[in-house]
Image 1: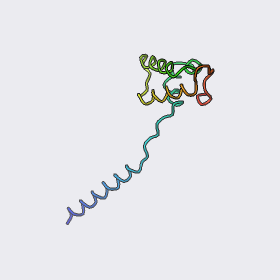
Image 2: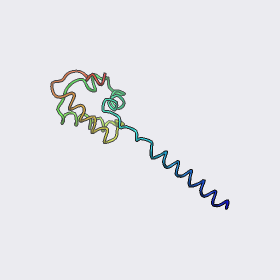
Image 3: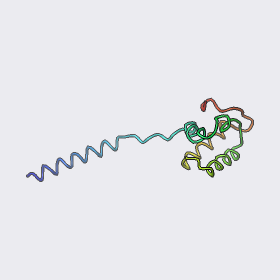
Image 4: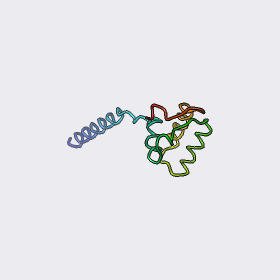
Length: 101
């Protein structure tokens, strides 16, 4: 009989732990402005990192050069930054976007 009680208690704890773990939401992916603040502004002033507009290809080249210099960001974060910068800082745009300030 004691083995049955121990098995029931163990199963109960395991079920509760599994339910609690399953209910925790996944951490949201950081936004591109947050990634830029963390990965770019550590080495560059914001006006240098995002001070003028470029084409999508130029932004991709800039970000790829920063990867060569050791920027700390995942491939998904880098893709988000490239897309964000191409959208908010197209050719002819000046100054860092308000979301970065």
